[in-house]
Length: 123
Image 1 (cartoon, one colour):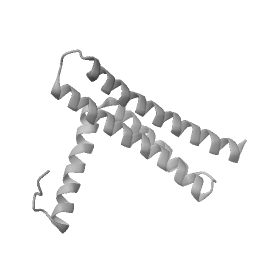
Image 2 (cartoon, rainbow, N blue to C red; image 1 turned 180 degrees about the vertical axis):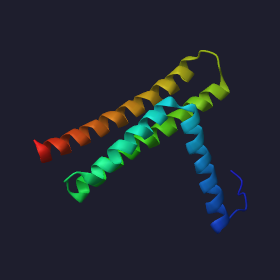
Image 3 (tube, rainbow, N blue to C red; image 1 turned 120 degrees about the vertical axis):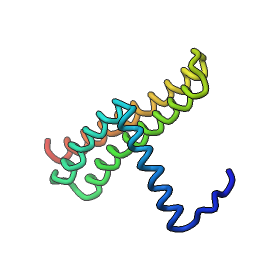
Image 4 (cartoon, rainbow, N blue to C red; image 1 turned 180 degrees about the horizontal axis):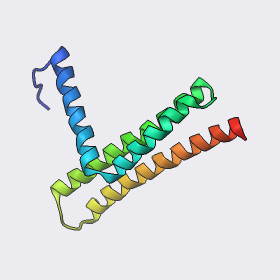
């Protein structure tokens, strides 16, 4: 990839703008991302309010953020596959299915972390 010539603060400002565009595209185009953001809006403040250790709180919040990260990456893979081909192709389906599996694992990871921490602290 060629160096765009942007350095320092200008590069940081441009990168922030590109990231914001990615968040907007995810919100506008991906229902799953919107649902997961709404889940994060509930779970992150809850993690801050619960009587858990700082490490447990960090793990709870990080697990929620991981779901959002993986969802954005999955959406990027799906968009790229759709750009390359609209035809049914085994490799295109595999790429989309693998992205979906990654989201599912992130959700399972989050659920396990939350359940283990809640169970160990409140039951």
